[in-house]
Every structure is written in C-alpha cells, then in structure tokens.
Image (cartoon, rainbow, N blue to C red; front, side):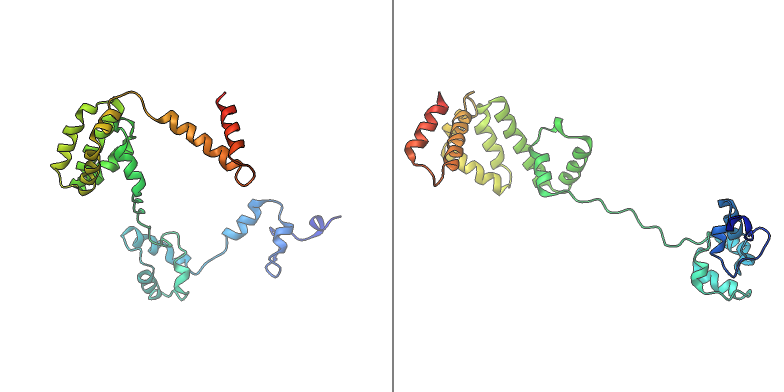
Length: 230
C-alpha cells in the first residue's frame, strides 16, 4: 500500500501543520483550490463596503484604509491594495509617438508622392504644416526630380527663377553651382544618354585593382582588364 492510499486525506483530516503535504495527498487540482479559496480573511467583512465605495468612484487605497480602520480593520495598507476593487497601479498614459528621423523625412520629400504610404503622407503633411520653408523646399525638389525623370531640361531656367524667389539658402547655393555649368546640366536633363556605363566600368577596374594590391604590377592589371573586355 502506498503513502497516498494509507495517508490522511485533506478532505477529512487536518493537515495545517504540514501544508506541503496537501500537494502530495491531493487527488485533483479542484481539491487544492477548494482549500485555498475557503481561507478566511480579515478583509472579508469589509469587502461589501469597499465595493460600494469603489462603485461610488473612490479608488484611493489610503482613503479607503482610513475609513475601514474606523470600522475595526487592523491590517497593513498593502493588504488593501491587493483587493480586486482597488487598481494596483494607475493606468499609464499612451506613449508619445516616436518622431521621424531626418533621413526618413528626406526620403519622403524626394520620393514621388504617389509612392508614399498613407501613414507616411500624413506624417509628412503634419511636418510641412509646421514649416513653410520645408513645404517650399519639397515643392522645388519635387519639380527638379520630375525634370530628371521626364528629361525636361527646358524647364531648368524657369525652375532656377522659382527657387530664387524663395528664401531658401541651401537651394540658392545649389542653383548658383548649376548656373556655372548651365549648358552641361541642361544637356544632362534633356539627352537620353548618361555616364552610367562608364562609371560601372570604372568600378569594375577598381575592384580588380584592389584584389591585386601589393601582389602585382600594372602590366598584369592591363591584361586582366583586356581579358575582361573580351
């Protein structure tokens, strides 16, 4: 016969001297819960009053403690804070939204408005409403990006005049540099050709040069470049 079969059962004997024995002799979870939930508390007789005060709008533990102590309650205040009617801590306010980073705002400004998500567009509009200069900057940058995409170099002079009409030092400095080589910039915004393939070839040559650095001379580099071209 096992200890479970021969030992006392918490349902018909007292076992408070050895409370851990209840976990051994218990035959179900419900049996343990029945013992736990049946324990009396000094706060039980005050619970109806606490529920009444809570429903009336009083949720301050210190105030309620003072009131029930006048009725005979002698336990510490932290016991009262465990009552279901008393919130353990005040509800925390909603966290403030994280402000967007500068790089993110820059991407929103130069990107085509049709490619922005609804959330990004709303956040960008909220920023532009607070800064008229930034709103003007977005308008000019968008017009310049349109010239690049649609190859409308014929609008460059008009765009420069519009920028000069606004007090935007950064864009004015940019237009000053454009005026110094206006013909080349206009051609770049008009002709369908670009130096992309040349830049790609230069990058390939640099990669081959770095892989040989310190281990070969210019003659081997020339041979590798020629073999790559063929």
